[in-house]
Amino acid sequence: MNNDLFIFCITVNCAKITTVMLSSFHAHHPNHKIHVVGTQADFTELGYMGTHPNTVLVDIGSDAEFMQKFKQGHQGTTSVFASVIQKRFNLGDYSKFCHIAGDIYFRKNCIKVVEKAFADGYDIIG
Picture 1 (cartoon, rainbow, N blue to C red):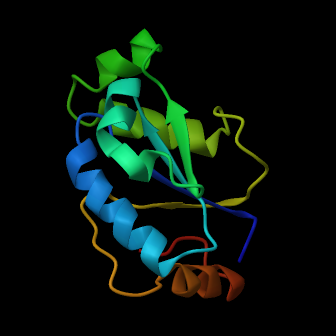
Picture 2: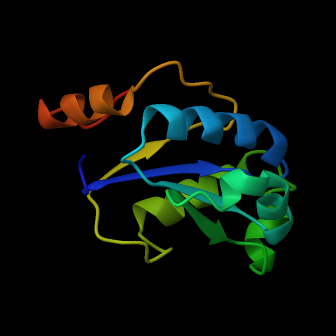
């Protein structure tokens, strides 16, 4: 496991589908933490997946600026990306990050492929 890799997803207003993603993520990546950016209402809707030991909740619900941006197209998502790049959430020291879309379903471990690509010198993996 690469401790230098920050893995995150955004679940604002889409916790039901994120729950399915998290279930499959944890099944195939038992040694990886995933940071879930959302609100208390989203986290409640995640149920058990919101309390999983490898799920780290990042609450942006009290940030009025963030919440307004989620009402304006993709501005909320871009603001979260900018915050991850700038390490605004203060969630550790990392130089690499991986965004997981909330509508992904994992059938096997794929983070090891991402980690290998970073180790091989790639800056962006898609």
